Length: 208
Ligand code: 6SG
Image (cartoon, rainbow, N blue to C red; front, side, top):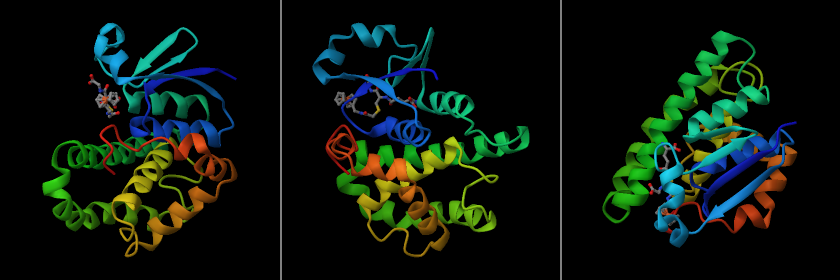
């Protein structure tokens, strides 16, 4: 089993989904937590391909870009579909999750005070797309009949949105069932109940 090292800030941010996946797959990891002060010194930033975190080391392979990391871990742990067609569909769904994550990040980091009401109004339209995919696939997962990295990524983003707007899933039975099913997976449940998870702020500016 490969041992991973995750380097990131003391927030859930772009590492929530990978931690959910590794935990659910029974895979341990090491963590290097970078403080704002240390990051601002610039030495670590200079060594990161895009000057950003997270970074994950897997042996002599060093990766940045959270979605590339999710794909790598998905490949390593059998969470990337059962064939190439499913893998492509999983990529498609993960790109959809990324589109919503970027909108969420823009709200949190740039528009929280002025844009929250409008964001919540428009959220249903975005969630309805995932609802339709989940409602069609009887397995309960986005694609195929086993969990994939896109499921962990969607689940993580839904956790954030349920903090932002606790009623946001009320009109979406398939998303609600998906969220409950993911939360009830025993290793995920233990992670969500852990201090390590609960003490980490969701975002770097304290907004949620
Ligand atoms: C920030 O944007 O945490 N990485 C972030 N910020 C620092 O100098 N496309 C890639 C990906 O998917 C996006 C990476 C992402 O991996 S994540 C980064 O490296 C930089 O650009 C969101 C997050 N924000 C917290 C934060 C970072 C710098 C200021 C606020 C933590 C809190 C204070 C310092 C460190 Fe902080």
